Amino acid sequence: MRKKKDMLWYLLFVLPLTLVFISVVIVPFFMGIGYSFFSWDGMPLNPKIFVGLDNYLKLFSDQRFLTSAGHTLYYTVLAVVIINILGFSFALIVTSKLKLRNLGRTMLFMPYLIGGLILGYIWKFIFSDMLRSVGEMTGLTHIFFNWLTDPDLALVAIVIVSTWQMAGYVMIIYITGIQSIPEDVIEAGKVDGAGFWHLLLHIKLPMIMQSITICLFLTLSMSFKIFDVNFSLTGGGPNNATEMFAMNIYNEIFSLNNYGYGQAKAMIFFLSVAVITLVQVAITKKREVSM
Image (cartoon, rainbow, N blue to C red; front, side, top):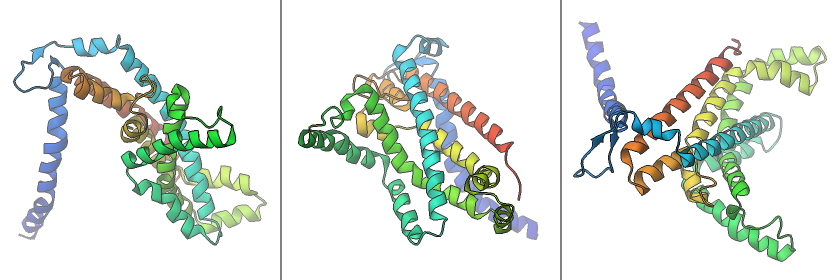
């Protein structure tokens, strides 16, 4: 009787969430797979023409899509490395005996609370009007100019904004890892004569591999999926030089009205992100140590 009552309580809490998850994630996902085999402009009254795998085959000759894939890979490598190095460095600083460490944690985490769209518009003003004004006042117009009009620097600008937003977030995860290291292990290392770098490379880093796994997974997946900062800061310009995967799919579906083709791109995008992040998790989990 008690088991039956527990089961009813379990269903009462789990069933509504399961239904919502199936409705907003599972069903649209499989509908998207289905649409990827059709040529359709997304208008309900217009016919859907079955084209089989043509949408997928077309991807390999779509130069704009392949270019956006290159931009995404370049951005992801830069962003993942810089965000994690800075996040870990911040975590080391605010877990030290610094007097202002609590204020530092708050200030470094705050950019994450601001949405990517708003951040993009704020930094758009900084990279365009503000830098140009500084260049005119100082005469250093070869450094201080509108970065968003330069194809290479515009991509770097997206990396800077993403780093500013995400470094504080991964810092929190690294702080949790650092604080979980037993104090006696650190003390034993110091007694044995280990310096700062020896402690960092041979004790702290191996013992926070769980945090590194989580941070790499989050930054990898978020970097691949970046859309809001890309949309608000550069809009994919200049001349599509900063168009990423997600923005390319958005433009294909909502600007060019190629709904079926855009869905095929989305499926390839999903598979790419899933495979890369799963490989990363598998590699880094092997290096985790239990405490």
